[in-house]
Length: 455
Image 1: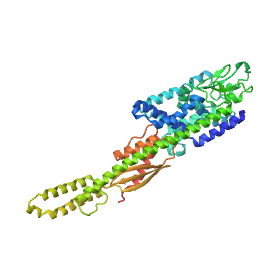
Image 2 (image 1 turned 90 degrees about the horizontal axis):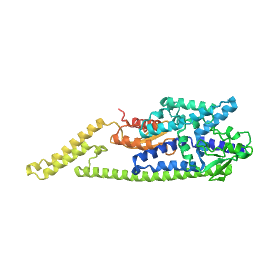
Image 3 (image 1 turned 30 degrees about the vertical axis):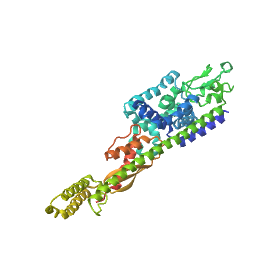
Image 4 (image 1 turned 180 degrees about the vertical axis):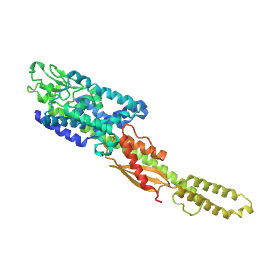
């Protein structure tokens, strides 16, 4: 049983490292978004963020910190590093129990700092040292290291720590573990033992990766428990049992139920979010199309009303030209009511119109920076398409980014919107997603560089 459970867990953890690399960051990021929504008020509540965190909350209330023990990629890496170092280097390092207990409080202090400084006050100071952020950006080395050297050095320190102390980061530093620890105090599952049947082996305590003392305890409800089932599978007398609402649950059933509920909730959540995003996109596109059509029709009407068949390409968007056209038009109307002598000059207005408009068009041509059209830009694996019209950025579309689903939704929404509104790439990065914001800005700058008119 012990080896079977260990194999299953290793396979699931490897799968998590490959598929769910940044899922822990996604979940923590959306806890932040829900928190910010609460501060902003119900009218601005972020429903998509809530769909991200609800599955984790539900699973934690039933199975405890099951995500930490089975599905967290960073936790899995900590496990594998410790196992390799233990076998390869025969490392036997034990942290004093009192010291261990004190150090475990650090993750709650760190979480408090994140909530107060970053989530509430908007100070991005802690992200500079965030090992999670660095881990998620390993694939962008060496440029990501240059941007966040401190975060990578702390990441390296935590990985070295994992070689000596089992689940080093999870025990002492993980803010998401701290959140789950608080939620798991309400969980409906626990480890149960009949202490009268216990021998002197204390294997349940020795095999616990989180250093929980299980000796002489009938029921274990510790918020540090990651539901790895090491204590259950290693008990030689099969005395340690996993229970849900007081009912004995075989380890395999417990594992399968946890995985099924997680994957069902994850994929249903992804489907719901995709649906919400598509609906939002459709509404946005419809509004954009309505505005564009109104703009085009207005310009077409002004143009046709004022002058015959002369074409001025894309420069009718310039309002100085439109004002000139309206001015000429007003003069024309005034001349209709003038005396016969003045009406003799009527034929001059058409020439005057052409001269003034041509002058305006020429002035604009001399000052124009970008060609009209859609241009592609790229920074690492993030690619965009930027559409320009009459020297203005009219749309920015993210074509690919390589990030986890929804994790960087905020910079992908906010930054293009700010750029189009301000007509400059000198906009603020999104707190908590600095690296992605910077890559996006560089990709957009790359597209704008390609769009420039070559002299």
